[in-house]
Length: 178
Image (tube, rainbow, N blue to C red):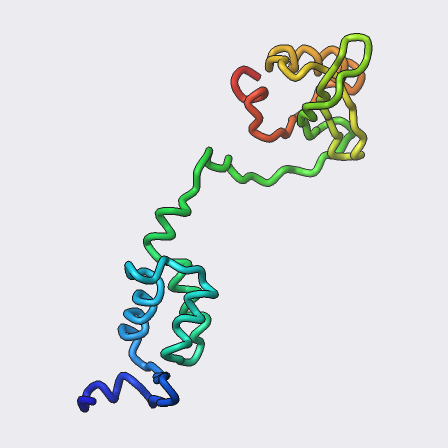
């Protein structure tokens, strides 16, 4: 070993067919992590398998944390695990309602077995945020946003009064024309 290479390692344990080094240098650790995870021969392993591979030849304090950090921040994983789909909406605090039927949650329950005289196969659920009381409106799965708005106006708002706000997920039935 060269003199300057001893400063990179604290000690080396040589056993039967193995040599385990305790590494001090950050660049040497990163090189080892790259070879154990990202090189062509390493198959881009999971965190646990990468840690097992690293521990066969070296060790350092907080080795597990270093492997986890390397695996989670690797460029290859960041590109492969990028978020798909729509971005989240604005996160705003929802005020607490002071009265019944002031703020409601709304969602669809679909793919129900057909029932009733009109063979309804879905249901719109309105839940009052103040009292947690629900209103269930039977409907058909293929109803448009306009049909939904008319149904809510005729069957719910006529009984509860005008709503201040309706909170729903970003269901395609609600967002295009509601």
